[in-house]
Amino acid sequence: MNTKNFNLSEYLHEKQGILEEYLHRIILQFDQEKELVQAMKHSLMAGGKRLRPVLAMATAEAAGEDFRIVLPAACAIEMIHTYSLIHDDLPAMDNDDLRRGVPTCHKAFSEATAILAGDALLTHAFTILSKPEQILSWSKSGSQPVFKIIPDQSTLLELISIISGAAGVNGMVEGQMMDILAVKDAICPALQMPAKASIRPPALQLDYLERLHHLKTGRMIIASVQSGAVSAGADPGFFKIFTRYAEKIGLAFQVTDDILNVEGDPAIMGKSAGSDKLNDKLTFPALLGLEESKQFASRLVGEAIDALSLLPFDFQERALPLEAIAEYILKRKK
Image (tube, rainbow, N blue to C red; front, side, top):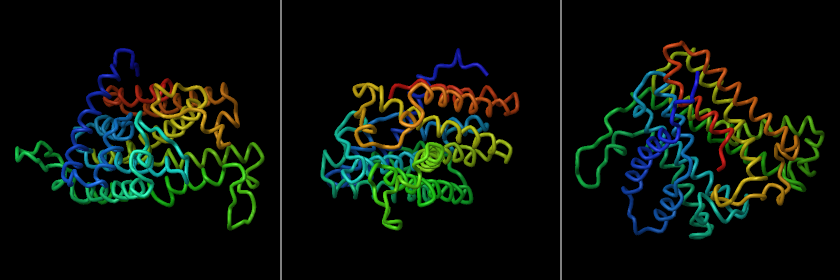
C-alpha cells in the first residue's frame, strides 16, 4: 500500500469534526450551569488528537462498513480516554498543570471536582454504549436526529465487554498501577520493599515496561480498533489482522510518547515535557537510549503496516487511513 497520495490531515479533520459534534450533543444534555458538567466539558471538549475514536472509524471503513456504525463506541472511548487523562494529571499521579493546551481539570476547578468529572465521564460512557439510540439521536433544537446507524443489541453488548475489559483492572487501570510502582522509591505494600527492586535488571525492566504500556496505553488502542471491526461485523480473519495492527501501533504510540517527553516542544504538544526524567519514571529512552527507542518505534510501525498487507487486495485501499495513522504515530510532534 502507498499513502503518498492520501491526505491524512483532511481525513483526521473530517473525522474529528464529526466526533466532536456528537460529544457536544452528549454534553448538552446536562445542566450547563453545574460545576461538574463544566468540568466534564472543560476536559472533553478541549480538542486533542482524538486518535482512538478515529482509529475505530477507520477500522469500520477498512472492514467495508459506514464509519457511523461505530460512533457509539467512538464517543464512549473518547470519554473514557478523557477520564483517564483527568485522573492521570492529578497530584497523586503525574501532577501535571497542562493538558491539550489548557489547564488540567484539577487546576481549572479543584481536585475533588476533577475526580468526580472523571468518574462521570467513565460511567456515562457506558450509558452511551448501552442506549445509543436515546443519546446520539437527541437534538436540543427539536430538529430531526441525524444519527440513524446503530449496532444491534448483541453487538453493543460485545462492545461493552471489549471496552470495559480494556479500561479496567486487566487493562488501563492495572497499567497505571504498574506505572506508579515503577517510579524510583515507590513502595509496594504487599512486598514491603521498593517496587523497582523486582524489575531492576535491564532485561526485566524492558519486559515490565512493555507489559505496563500494553495495559496502560495499548489495551484502549486495541479496543478502539476492535470496536471498529466488531461494529462493522468483520469476520474472524479480519479481526485478527486488525488486532495485530493495533497491538503494534499501541506500543509504538507509547514509545513515541516517551521520546516526545524528552525532546518534544511543549508549545506544540499542549503539555509539559521533561516530566518523566524529573519523576524518574521507567521509560523506553531511559532503558534503551533515544536513538534505539526511535528505531524500536519504527520497527513496530513497520510490523503494523505489514499486518495490513494481509488484508484481501480489494480491502487494502480501504485500509489506507490505518496505514497513514501508523506512519503518523511515528512522526507525530504531539
